[in-house]
Length: 317
Image (cartoon, rainbow, N blue to C red; front, side, top):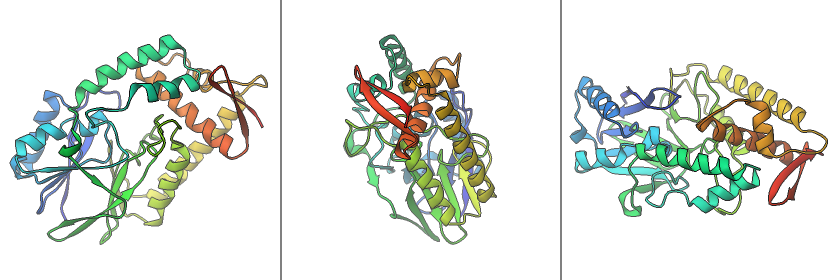
């Protein structure tokens, strides 16, 4: 099975995104890049170098539905004429309705984010979503954990790896233990456990960091020989990366607990202590990081939480 990486530029701070062409029947593209002219040109050039055209693509598979990974899915499907789009059912970013604003706002209010900051985050998100076309429910097919995507010479197994988003998926070629992991595994940065409603009960918060740690352990159980990430270089020593991630999570946990004063603090207050001076999208990501670690510490009995004026206040247990 020939896996061809195609680097596609993005307008985001994370830099280029890696898309992956599976160069055998049915020709499949994993992730697409954002909806920009530069991304379209880079993707076309990458396909040309591999001696393919968009019209050859029969499947577009999404690791998750962030704009830098799913933005061109609809336009590529239309250009290919006969391609289907596949994504896990717990993803929401690609849908016409997207995530209901009220659900996301409730999570930010509970995290202690002030109203003016929530409004600014909303404006920021409205700008970001311009980099992806939305899909109606009948324009994609849901994939499920353990499903096998068949190719001429083998299969890729769908591995549900929630954490970065609820529906994040990786794709395992068992013959040589090669894994395409999207943003679940990145060589030089630790993925952000993005604040999200629970896909089963949107009134609750998705426990992103706890789920992410389970996903990392599940990947470890495959003993992958090579992991292709959504950004940066491939990883050929997953065990080293796994232990580095684990240390980073433990160190951040200790930092978060140290920052909780005797009087208690909200996730927003902890985020501002951890990342002073953060701006733009980083304020939302800082809040996501704080919420994820506070949730994990609370689930392990290290912190207690109570509701005060609709906000969650964390205290030492």
